[in-house]
Length: 481
Image (cartoon, rainbow, N blue to C red):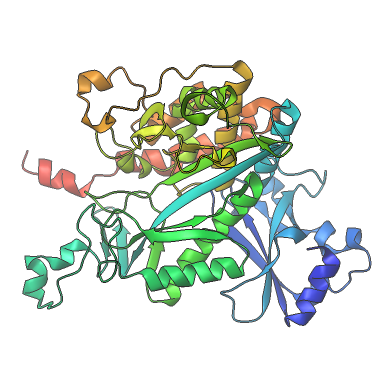
């Protein structure tokens, strides 16, 4: 919407506040809220708050400024405006870009700016003019979560009435009478009710998403027990899909909360069952034509094969951004049902890169990159995936032969040794990124300060503390050593 359209929209809907949202470096939405009177002067757009911006303390935001250079500006993007569905007072929500208040230049660590630069770099290469992204964000809806970490104790507990553990002897001892109709481990994809008890809450999530401008194609229960679900959005351009992915998470969490439940995008909250991924579909277009469609293997083009080669070659470094938590590697475990193998295939879901055979329509030809999960910053994940593939295109790399006939999960350790994989820890992925990041710097899309800040934060706040903390299972293994 234009500023004039927003003014009329606010008047028609009785809007009294404006909620300005922006993302920190690691993917968490932040916000400030202003009375609507702050936007009443629409006579000169360039002098209105939409252009002059709102000041905030950048030193209080993860991955942003130091204390001595903390002042930053939020510049709302009018095209992102919608009525916030979770604030009781009528409130216009709008996503902002971040600028330096002195130079008035976009801030290098604003992930939305990095996403916009990635789209611009695609155009500058001449390869294409548009990239479409379609992520599949998976999540769990629990009834309860508790966790504690202190010097002398550490614990966590999650529970869901749908959890298969609520159909065991322990439940009988508690006196629970209704022990049937729960999805078994790896049995949630996807029986009807009563096994799937969350159709209504997912329907509610979809309705709210569509009210906020997200077009949804379908939703379903996912493989794991205990309330794992997926809602699939229709594809969109890279930056807009980054906006929508954050809005998607905001809606899922808040709809769960108002139903007395709690939703999480943590990749692996349950031991012994499937984790939550974010399979990311991508295609590059030029002048309205899908450049990934062609006469090569599985109906793809040579350009698409080069793109896949870029994902494979840079796959280990990509995971530092696309699977960016220590918990991500509880999901990405070799030998289990996780896409850790850096190979490609048309139908084999054990490959990191898949070409979905959903339709002969060339407009639907795309690559599905399966290792990412939804715990990180979607703007950075999508931008990094694009940059890795473009590097393969520019260098005309060959991805080798596809692996179609082999279930990679059935291979022996000796056979798997010849197949490249992602790293087995966040530490390993961060080291891979330190060694292989030039492809992200091309076109000034990512900058050295972004990557240095990302890596340093991950080591200091995630890798090192978890490395030093005893695990509860270690007491069972070693206390009587």
